[in-house]
Length: 68
Figure (tube, rainbow, N blue to C red):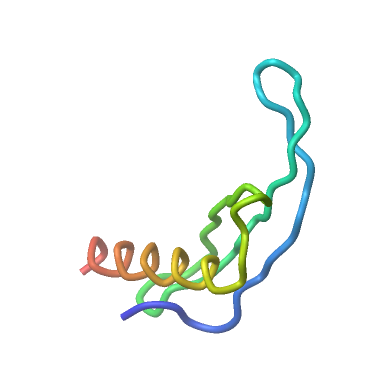
């Protein structure tokens, strides 16, 4: 169970409820047991490639377990 294929990563700018701008990394991934893509957002201040992979793997396993 887990990730299938490559992670897609893109950076974009978003705004909080107060209108303050911040940067976010969007991580798009696929799982072994499902079709389609899933997305995680990580604030750029917290982003590393290792963290992106760890979070995507954990979420992929969670999704695959839920699907059965």
